[in-house]
Each structure stands twice: as C-alpha cells, then as structure tokens.
Length: 509
Image 1 (cartoon, rainbow, N blue to C red):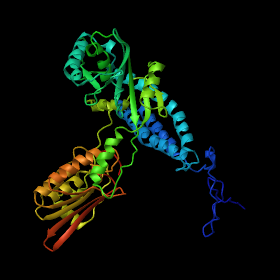
Image 2: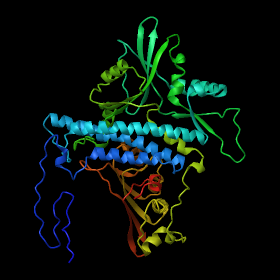
Image 3: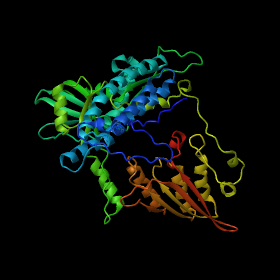
Image 4: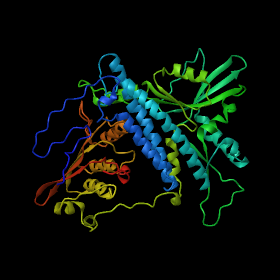
C-alpha cells in the first residue's frame, strides 16, 4: 500500500488538509542583527539589485541583437539611478529614524544599517560585471561599425570638427567655477556630470575648479566618417562618436587660458529623491508641490561616483564639501552615467534591433463605424502592448470633436511630454465641451511635467483638480457623457496603465 506524506510549507510547518483547522503560527522574533529570523521574507532593496542584475544578463546575452543589448544596459543604469535616489535614500532616512527612536526593523529582520551594508556589498560585484559588459559591448559595437572614440583616436578631420563643435556649441554654455576663499564650493545637482579640474595658478598656486557638463547637449557627440573609410555597396555607413565630457576635457586651455591644468577627473552625484511632497490643508496643493520640488534640489547626497584616477585627497575633499560622509562612494570606469548610451538605440540600424512589432487593432474597431457605436454594441478589452493603444487615443479624440459629446472627465497620472490625449482634452474645451481632469501632481519624477500640463490645461479652460490631500490618485479612467436619441449615455474607459501613448507600446498593462 502506498503512503503519502503531508505537504510541508517552506517554513517547515505541515500544511493542513482541506477542512482541517490551521494551527496558529507564532511570529518570529525580530532581533537586530539576525535577518535569518525572517527566512520567508526577502529584503526589498537587495531584491531590486537582483532585478537589475537579471536585466544586465540581457545586456550580456550575445544571442540578442546588439542595440537591444544596449537598451537593456541603459535600463540597468537608469534603474540604478532611481534605486539610489529612492530606495537607498529611504534606507538612510530609516536609519536616522532608528537612531532617534522613531523607526524599527525592516520586514526581513535587518536594521536599516545592515541593509545599507548589504546593498553596498552587493553593489560592488554588480558594477564590476557592468564594467566588463560595457567593454564587451564596445567591442561588439566597433565590429558592427559603431565607434565610440577617445580624443587621441580621432583623425585630423574629426579633430577639426570636434574643435569647431566645441567652440560653437559647447563653449558658450559652459560656466567654470573656481573654488577659493571668495568663491565657495558650488552646488552639485542631482545626476549631474561634472569635471573636477586641478589648476596650478602661477599667482595663487594649486586651485580647484568645477565644470558642469551641459545636460542639454548630446552626451554622445556624432563625428564625421574619416575620409579614408569606404562603405560597401548596400552596407550600413559607420557611425563615430565621442563623449561630451571628453570634448570638454580636451579643450580646457580655452576655459583656463594661461593656467596650467594638472588634473581633470569626472564625478557624478545622486541626491535623495524620496522626499515626501508636503501637503497642508490650508495651502494650495500646487504651491506645496512646487516648494517641495525646489527643496529636492538641495537634498542630501546618497551616492558619489568617480573614476579610479581621481586622487584620494581630491575625493576626500569632494566628500567633505558635499557633506557626503554617509553616502555610498564608488569608483567606476568611465563613462559615468551610462544610462545615456540609450542614444545609440536611435541609430538607423534595423539589422541590430529586434524586428518591429506591430500591435493588433481589434477587428470590431476596423469596420469604419464610430467608436461610440462599437462600444454601445459591446464592451471591449485591450491588452497593451499586444493590442494597439491607438483606439484609446481615438476614443478621447473622437469625444473631443463629436458634437453630441457634452462632457469628458478623466484621471491622469503619467502622460508623457508630448501627449495627444491632453491635446485632445484642450481641443474639446475649445469645442465647448465640459472637461474636468484630476491630474495627480505627486507622480514621482513626473511632478514638474504634470505641473506644466496642469497649467496648460487651465489656460485652455479645463477644470483641473490637483489630486487629493494625503493620497495619490493612481487610477486611470475616463468618462464621456454623450447625448443620443434615446437620452444621455455614458461611455467609460478603465485601464491599468497610464494614459501615455509612448510607454503603452512597450510596457505590459
């Protein structure tokens, strides 16, 4: 006769059969320094790093198209920027709360200090793997005609082009700031790329200057193809680039004429981006959000990135001036801020990308009937990005122009910088319709974009509500009120993703 054993949970507790009462389980004690007391719980921050590690594996996968690997690589570093600005800064705040007696342990049993130490320990091999991956990607890019060159590798024609580009496009927007008793250390903004320049001034001796690499210029500056390079018939012309900071660094003689430059080093700073938006019932919510955004500019430093060639004395001075003794400081090979390699994905190289995916438009919407008559006959379900987001945009645009539509009411969280939906809402108001929008100002990292849209909508006459005090409105829904022959009808769209026509082509919703 066969026998079976009762199933056991991951905690070693027998799982009761159907109909049996489950014995109460005593919660494990939360003891500082013993994360094993919560074996069933994972640390949230370490889990995020593991996620970025898995995305990095996609960038390492040589079987994938090269520019898709570049995109994955950019995602890793963009994600790490967010990780430090939000997750690590949150741990810093929790650690300070523990020290003041206002916070306890994390769910996995670690103290915030232990979690920060574990993050730093896990980060080092992840960055080493990233450096190795970047070297592999550079080699593969060069083999496929995409060259990112050092200044010393430029030929005469490229050097002349670089000099002219620097003088005409870069030089006018640079502002070198020297540090001396009359000029204090300048503010270093969140995610800014900077050059620390050491000068040997003949009159005042060794001096330090900081140059901010312009964030509004292409990080990868395109260069002309060398004259001696020929392109095979039917082949793809090669592409050549140089890093913007390398161009700035190679023309320091124009920024400090007559002053010898004895050192130039790249560094980058990540600041706390996890500050709560302060809301007061007695104040205008828009003003509260704007004030909090201004304060974010001067939030504490979470991470300092620098290249290995920076002298220890200069690194110590930076950390001291930035009040960054509690920050995670990492040495990384150039280039820093590798999220910017995403610019390479814009190259017209379909041979280095996945075949384009064309989302499906449901047949019921491809009959020529108005979208309202289709929805009146039956409900529709769209699964983005596999189904096109175009019908959602058409739903709002049709409502904006339909003379029988009386009102449009919508909630918005993230909408993007160029939104056809918001343009349609403003057009609807111009057409005399009642338009009301609840626009969440507290959408993290989109606050400034949403404030701009809120002001545009209000200028167009749209009634705008700036969220709800104490809450975030994260639902995505639209109500269209339409006058029809048999009376007033309401048409509704409910979604799980944002009203963002760009990300709807990428993210599963």
